[in-house]
Image (tube, rainbow, N blue to C red):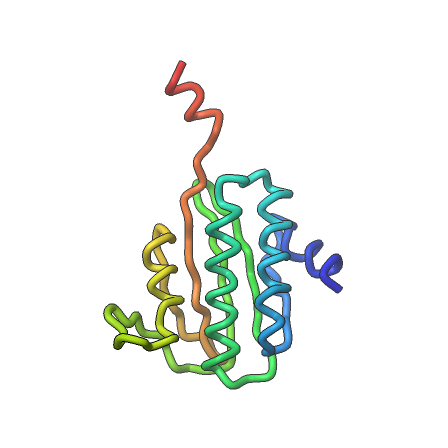
Length: 147
């Protein structure tokens, strides 16, 4: 199943999303898929943050959206990588800046806010998409600057 999904996500010309069941184990599947796509695209500098933040967005969708399925999209544009998780809820997420002491939840979006270059949420006709973007550093341009 993951191999089939990888083909959809790793095609840079595809605008398709992968549909995953809204279950806790889907966070692991989504993390592995994103790692595979980033490796295929040779975006090794984004592996750790991309994996972590994808897991956080999927976990939030599973925990808070209440739907049966979630969607995962990975899009690369010149200079940017965008990862989006879609769910059936139209309730937008909010960033909790200072959760109460001992509170176990509320850290996911703080991680996204700290590690992503930008993030947000968009209302869709049937739910929402929560996304983050990270800058892609072009190695050739960096190497030319250093030479």
